[in-house]
Each structure stands twice: as C-alpha cells, then as structure tokens.
Image (cartoon, rainbow, N blue to C red; front, top):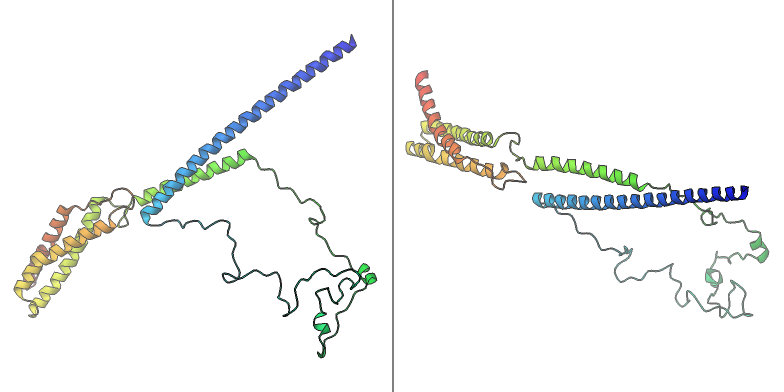
Length: 300
C-alpha cells in the first residue's frame, strides 16, 4: 500500500510540474508576442518620426548627407600602391627564398640555398659593423619567458550583463515620447514667422507699414529742409510727398511682410493687409507735412 501511495504522490508531483512547465512556456510565448508587438509599434513610430524630420529639414533647406559606401577600407597610400608588410630588402636579395635543403646549413645560418647572405655583418670592407650575436641552443632554452595575456592564455573574459528586452523597449518608448514632445515644440515654433512672432498678423502688418511710413516722413522732412535752401524744387517736393514716398513705403512693407512675416511651416502666403498699408503710407506723409506747416506757423 505504501508503494502505491508513493507512486500516486510521484504522479501528482510530476503532473504539477508538467502543468507549471506548460504555464511557464505559455507565459514566455505571450511575453515574446508582446515584445514583438512593441518592437513593431516602436519601429513604425520611429519611421514616422524620421519622415517628419526629413520633411522639416527639406522645409528649412537642410538635407541629410548621403551614407557612405559600406565595406570600403581606408587606404594609407596613393591609389594604385601595393600594401607591403615590411621594408623592402636590398637589391638582388630575395625577401623570402626557398627552404634550405637539409644538410647544407643550419637554422638561421647563411649559405647557398638559404636565401640569406649574412646582411650588413657579412658585407666586406665596412668598419664598425660587427657580426650579429648568435644564440646557441642552450642559451635559447634559458631565455626569459614572454608575458602572455589572460585572453591569449585561454582564460575567458568577463561576461557582459544580461540585457532585459522589456526594460530596453521601455527606455526606447520614453525616448520616442521625448522626441515627439520636441517635434511638437519645433512645429509650433516653425508656424511662427521670424518677424514679431508673438504678435497677431494684423498688428504685425500695422507695425511694419507704420515703420516704413515713419521713414518716409523723415525723408520728407529732409526734403522740406532742402527745399527751404533751394536744393529741391516745390514740384519735386510735392510729387515725392504725395506719390513717391508713400508708394515706396507701401512696396517696402509689402515685401518685408512677404519675406519675414510668413511662417516656415503652414501658410505659404502671409496676410499683408494692403488696405491698412495704403491708408498708413498715403496718409502719413501728407498729414506729417501739414503738421509741420502748422507747427512752423504756430512758432512764428
């Protein structure tokens, strides 16, 4: 009886472990599907952000440089030069010769068939150049050992920490949210004109036309003073005061509003309010002249 009870307990234990394993496998599969869906969502989102940035760049006239060719290695010499692994040998001496036949010369010796003629030590007639020191077999065995790194010795390096995919995707989502926030701020700034961005279009047009009208009034006052000394005639002063200066002011304000009063993104044409410009420009100069005459007569 005890054997049957132990068998039944073992079966229940195995069944419990099997169900736990199946649940774990199902949970892992669901986690993989969720991670895959998150990756696809972030991929589409980043693609849309890249397209939006490219559009903004084309709008302001900035284009990204084309990617360079992959798989090309930089060359250190001029085109057509052959890479060398070491300095060239002397003329007439091969850099690498055929192996010496056994019995003619020892290892590292000189002689026929070795491809080595002794170098500078064997050159006759040179003073101050001695023979290269030869190391015997016994001395080579007593040479100092060479330090070997742990990686070359076969010791495994330190493993990098495990990266949690869910944490990395969450960080990527946060950075994408931050990029969207900055993109929205950029679009808001791009929809404002460079000239008086916080003003309304009508107030901006009024200020621009009024500024040009003020410049025309100053020029008119200079011409009046020049007319008083006989430099400018009366007909010339009258024509510039009634037509020339007001028309120049209107055209100048119109051009300035069209160039700097238009936002970089959004409306292609800025509201210029030509009626306000006509009234300000064509009434400011004559009224200023009338006010000048009244002031002169009052002071007299």
